[in-house]
Structure formats: structure tokens, C-alpha cells
Image (cartoon, rainbow, N blue to C red; front, side, top):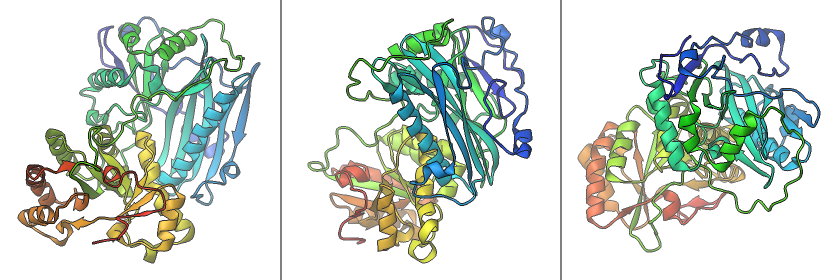
Length: 513
């Protein structure tokens, strides 16, 4: 494939057919799987739009195997035995590099790899295999950069994903890719540049692009010093009803010329760019000489709820929406944005897999994201043991893979719980959230009935059950917001109403009304 012709000052977007770039290190796979993976990287005719790079969509690779100053850790499924859900038969072959003097980076990469294994186990349908290989993308100017390449197979087929991680040798801080940027404003600007670059591309759902950490989790620099932004297979693909977005056409890339990228970079990003271009890489480093201090804010990590809301003083109400994301959810998000209302969304597995872009939008716009279990079934009746663990783990893993956010809230379908269910929810670090007021929208109530049910039952601290999948609920929402606001209510998240729910506890403490 070839990119569209663009001016040198614009970003170049480049869809890349094939599962593996020419310099990507292969994990150990059966021959049949390797045959399917090792496809040529399609040529991307962008020479006219950049300054002389043969493959401008490729992040610089300095090393892709152990050598002087660099060793490798490699593990399999048995190295991740402490995860809450461990599906049988899943092949795991993962690796990351270790640098002399950078033990903190080794620990940081180990944590990232551990999270990838955990989330693939939880989020995938019938997982078959997971491999993670690595490349060194920068070494010098006080920075090390590593690109991790995931190769996944499950019920929905083969796909690849990417992540770059950056290490400040002076402080020992392991940074996410978005920390190459100065702040959230820079990420917002980059998101706009990338949207423009992909505008009109039928393979890309531009509306699914949002300035969140996990969308921009793989960024580096090419041999011209341009910023290369790459996206996982299928991350930007349009919605396919009833099915996760297709992994075709594979890896998608936007190349932002250096003169346009430089104003967006942080100090770490500027040094990472220079390190990517260094003629003499510095792979062995000294142990950190400075106290890393408090962890810096990560661009693309979004806090839910209004910062000026204090439910200990304010007359708060939490609107909660179950069963999405659905085709109707973007319309609700439009309304909430227009009215400056924050809500809490409890998601099911299949909708979260089918509409990941809507999930990312809800997170990016400051709404609280919780789990409503994988399958919408009565949990005490249908699930126990390892199957219960998998049901609880699924949506949390899906959300983290799409946003980077760790889910803290879990609502069992129908509000049907048990000591065993609550125990598993707590074991996985979440609080159980029921509701104190029921809109009755699930009973087939009309728009006006839903409005009266919500407004008539409202009281400070109320947590209201609604469903963004139902047309009468969406029709009722504007009047609900108007009337509650007219009565002096402030819209808050569930976590704000309950003052930070604790894992393993159930809310409201008195149970369902």
C-alpha cells in the first residue's frame, strides 16, 4: 500500500500489511504459526513526504538480540502463576532485555510484560498463544528505549500489538510512550494531527482516536528524527457489529516530521530523539544518581469526575449506565458532554470488545469505567472456581488494554451476588457496586415513567440504575439532567459518592433498595 501524498509539514499515515516488520525479533512458535506471521511489510511510498528515509514508518532499531551490556529474560506460562485467571493450554513465550546498571528498567519492563500476560489471559476469547519480543530503540543521552512486540492468537485470529518504554538513567524512572510528550495538551494536539493524517481512510475509524495513554502506547523516532506513532492491529478499525474490529489492514502508522513534533516533546522526549539518532549507542549505564522523586503525571491517564465536586458537602447524585457500550452510547456521550455531566459506565465483555473506540471515548471524556461482568448472567448460579475468576477478570483486562485504566468497580448483573462472588471481586482489587435507586427502564417503562422514577426517588448520595442500550432511557436523559440540576443536584461518579469504595466491600452497605 502507499500513503496519500502530503506536504512535508504534515503527518504521514501509513497502513502496513503483514504481521511483522522486517527487523522484528521472532518469538519461538510452531512452524505453521510462523508461516502465517512472517509476511512481508508492505511498501509505503512516502518518500515524497519525508526527507530521505527509506522506511519512514519504522522506529529506529539499534539491537534486537542479547549482546555486550545487554542480556535477556525469557519466560513462559509458569512464570506468571500468581495471576487470578490462568486459562488452560495458553502458550506463553515472552522476553525483555536487561541492561547493565539499569536494574530499575528491568523491573519496569518485567511489570509491563507481567501486565500484558495477565490482560491477554483475561481479555481474550479462547486464547491460544502469546509471544513478546523486543528491540532496543534508543541508547544514549541518558535514555534507554525498548519496543515490545506482542504476537497474539485467540478465537478471533492472529494480530500484533506494540509498546515502547523509555528509561531515564539519571532517575531510574521507566516511562510510558506518552511521557515523550510535554503534557496532556501536547497529546491532545498530537491526536488532532493524527486524526487529520487518517481522515478519509476507509480502514480507520477516526472517531475512535482519543488522547489516552493506551492508544498512544507505542511512539519512537525514525532515522530522520521524525516522530513515529504506531497502532496495534485493529486498534483503529471501524466497528463490525457483533464482532471485535478486524485486525486488517494490520499495523497503522502516522509519521510526524521532526519540525512539527519537536514543540510537543518533553525533556525526556527530546533526549530520546537524540538517543535514537546516536551513532554510538550507550547500552551499559550507571546506576541512577538522583532520587526519582514522586512519579510524574502520565499524559493520557484520565481522572474521572469533576475535580471541584465534594460529595461530603455537595448534593450529589450518580447516574450509572449498564450493559454497554452500545450503538446508542455515543449519542448519550454527546448529551453528557453538552451538559457537562459525568457518569459511571458498567460494561459487559462482548460490547467492550465490539466497540473499543466508544469505551476509549467515555474514558477520555472523564467518565468512570466499571465492569458489569463478561457475560450478563446470574453469577452465583452460573459461575464458580476458575470460570468465576475468568468472568470477573475479563472486562477489567479489556478496559486496561484499551485505555491503560485499572478498573476499581464491579457491578454483578441483576445485582445478583454471593459471598463467593464478592470474594473474587475483592481478590481482583475491585469493590462491588449495586444501586440505591432503580429507574425501572429495564422493565419496558416509557420515557416519562423513567424520568419520574429517577427524579421522584432522588436524594443526596443516590446511585441511579440506568441502561444506555435503551432508547427510552436516552430520550429521558435530558429531562432527568435538567430537573435534577434544577433541584440543586451535582452529578458525580460512584467513587465520588461513596468517597472511594474499598476493594472487597459492597456498596451501598445496606444493599439494594
